[in-house]
Image 1 (tube, chains in turn cyan, yellow):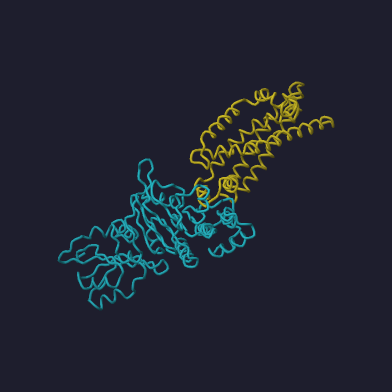
Image 2 (cartoon, chains in turn brown, purple):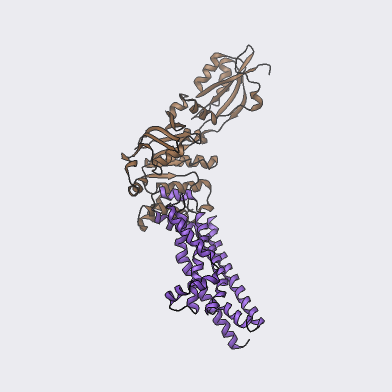
Length: 340
Length: 219
């Protein structure tokens, strides 16, 4: 579907991408994550042919993008649907008009355009908003228009550039759900470029971590959830959206265990909710009481991803082991004195 | 006011309107493409050929720098070539258009430049040709600003047309000079001024209304 081989690109001697290689299968959802300046934007621009790579190739459905001249490139670009962070909708056109633009570019006759716009509006759930202008829409609705427009040409790949970064959490969740639905129903391959691990965790099948122009990790989200990430950067992305210990607590926590220490644990779940009977079970089985220091329970609606920070009344090795078997993610943050 | 003088006023007002509207139409016809060229040939633009932009920019600024009263005289041979005569209302339209074209082009350029480059990039990435982008993105998105620019241009044209009396073009300015200034008829002069003020207010009002209507959705 999409194959990138040894892609390198430098601007005025500053390397933006260095020997990037990866491939995306048909129907796959792949996330590309990186800090700002990691080369995400350059990679995206190379993928849609807006930027010519210095060396290396981009293959879309087996066709080498770098071999095409401007005119033929237009046709190939139409195989890629783009979704933008800032929506990039025409302010002067309505919802219908904005979707129509993409079809006009493809040279589709007016009659068929009307039919296809109707279908696309249904697909993205914008019924009743057809005659509204972008300023009359919420961020989430604008992005739905953006997605409908991107899908107008029946693209093989949907390239999402920080598509949810400008949205509030609720709109983000609904847009991600829409993308998942599109992937399942239409079989469209999706490449997400983002700096938010949450987006990838919720949607992607696989994640590529980009750092200083190189891909430092290529891992399935399943393996990621099991904590099998190798690279420090990947782990730091995971920690980014975990609950960090409040400052007032942190000063009491030491890294080394001592005789009367109580362990401080962080329990996390990536996909499922934490079991509600976890703490009762802990007490029944080991006679250990746990006190909750901090919690961030988001529930199923946001794809699980609960986090709990606890201290245990005793430093009981078996209990910690038992816990680690019952939650997806467990980390011993440190220890606090029991006379705290 | 006797009937004859009233007729004189009607004729003069019509002549002024004729000059203003004809020049405005010509200004848009040539000025808009010029503004588009000035915009898209900028570095990082849709068609970044700097040399074209520079030459056009130079010509535009040159024309803008010449005072209208001088342009009126310099252009006499050209006017004679185009219209066949250098005198009268039709003849005045030529120099008026020649000042209005670069004037409108510069104002229109500002509005066109305000269209988000990111949006243009996005539509380009969707596979649109340059012509399609100019037609469907650049002009519609800049339309409220273009209408405002046209309004400003027309108001300037109203005041410039008053000078066209120099080439015997008639119009309100001519009336004010011949009757008001040369014959010391102050009442006549004040009448002319009031009509000019009224015309300006009407043009500005209509322009503002149209622009605001267009803008209502846009921002």
